[in-house]
Amino acid sequence: MNESKLKKYNSIDTIVALATFPSASALGVIRISGKAAIKIASKIFKPANKKDIRKVKGNSLFYGWIVERTKAKKPKLKTGLVVDEVMLSLMRKPRSYTKEDVVEISAHGGVLVLNKILELIIEQGARQAQRGEFTYRALVNGRINLIQAEAVRDIVEARSDQGLRLAQQQLKGELSKEIDLVKQDLKELFSQVEAYINFPEDELKISTGLIKKQINQLKNKLDKLLIGSKDAKILKEGLRCIICGKTNAGKSTLFNCLLREERVIVSRIHGTTRDVIEETINIRGVPLRIYDTAGLIEPRDLVTKKAIAKTNQSFDSADLIILMLDGSRSLDKDDLFLLNKIKDKNVIIVINKRDLKQKLKAETIANFKKPKVFLSALKKKGIKDLEKAVFNSVYKNGLNRENIIFLNHYQEQFLKKAVESITEAKDCFESDDAIDLVGCSLKECLDSLAELTGEVYSEEILENIFSKFCIGK
Image 1 (cartoon, rainbow, N blue to C red):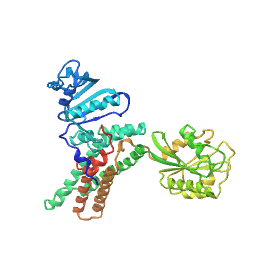
Image 2: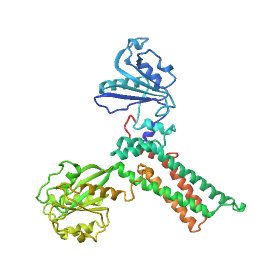
Image 3: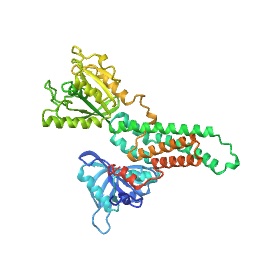
Image 4: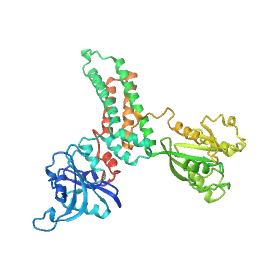
């Protein structure tokens, strides 16, 4: 690995960055953070009320101008060149995003003018911020924990209203509090076990039944959080959903129907779709990365062979499969091949063309224990039933928002380790193994949760998180 970018993150420098997208727009915001933020701003900002912003005690908002000072021996703001008319927000530590002195300048959104203001600030001693460095400072200064830091990015990248709401809840610290409660219970339980190990001769009145009960309760809580992290992954990244079936079963018609636009050419000619086509839709708050695929038939030429190879590749990596059968035709060997191919997967069987005379009867596929929906993609009938089936297939027991937690890959691994450790503690206790092993497992569980929330962290984890942030966040 190259030299860590985190070595460039330090709390000594005053940092600056554009906090809005760099393009022509109505407004652009520049953020400065650090011990010299207010001093630097005072050298380039001329307030309309002529106050010295360095002497303002509380958080304040000023109207004025950004001024480029002249090259005179004793340059003054009033003799400088006006660069832009702005609003300046001044936030004194610790009442700011980073818990440092922060200045935000709202200027006109022209690329040239914003770059000019950035240059003036850097000339006065600030440094260009690294990706995610403002949020990094909020983390190391104790304003947020690692889970909340991840939530900042999740808000920016949310793909659904539900995902946005959950990220906002996580940023407020509601889910962090849940983990903190688990940690407190773990510490108390660990202390009891340690006391039992170190002072057995004192005949401490510790109920083994109570210890067992507490271990089970903690395991259940961590199991729910792990399930919640998987649910969150769907809300965050979207569910990979494949529409598959024989040629001319109506896959592309359904694809267009779900998208509410004609994205794919529909034809009665067999094999019209020759590639995997991807779009993202939202079904009851679940973002679905939906793929229309080439029909699974015996390939007759090189192009068809490649198309079906791509279909098979997508098929294997899918989170959900919508298998389309033509209700106006009886099952044939190709349909049976597909039904057997999907028997171990998360599948919804769709019997299409219900507007036509039906030859495929429900009892024919009754042995395939999968959700079934009868619809007409052409007439747009039964689509609501399919959307309900999709939601139910993802959240069979409903969506429990209280336990959902957005985690990146590293953080999810720590939660899995915590679950594994508490499971080991439970197994050791129930099998009458040495009580020392129970204590070790509980300690490992605590350590994993500390890494999850950021009490203990490595440069690799932080670099993984903050390298994905935008520059001004």
